[in-house]
Length: 201
Image 1 (cartoon, helix red, strand yellow):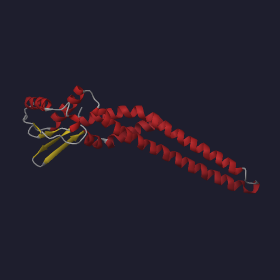
Image 2 (spheres, helix red, strand yellow):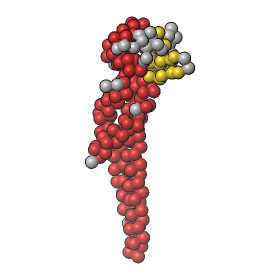
Image 3 (cartoon, rainbow, N blue to C red):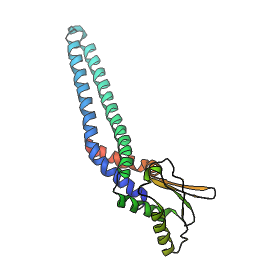
Image 4 (tube, rainbow, N blue to C red):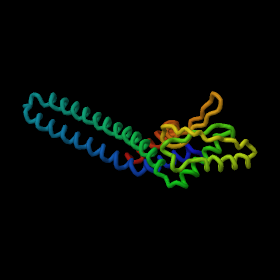
């Protein structure tokens, strides 16, 4: 399982816990709005006499149609809110992983991404858990796989949230968790949509 798959799996796990709550709240707000509209229409209908009953019914139909549209907009807004919320929480959850689990994921990501001669940049946020020892470990594993094991750790820490950047020559491989989460957003949105439609059904 690669880095993006691990992140996507974690995001979807969190999403299932959040989906029902956010959609239920949105649908409750929408139902309340619709009930308010119906009550408003009923009060207005009392003002009409027999000759204007058809006009009143048409007015009611339009008001209910508007309420239905607003209800759908509420649900769509809740879906987008959920996706934004889950993506944000995914980044937080990754940074809060236990040290050894986090180092293991970064090690696997380095093995997948590195040719073995790049310079590795870690973040300021990871100063306490990603250091020369993980680069040494990855170099050993690279050599065991028949690749160069000459990764160098940059002495400069950069401002990003987790993961790493590999640089060699004029090329850069961005394996920061922020970049990986953005890359996985389309797939995650598709999976979340399935969850949300299931909740609605």
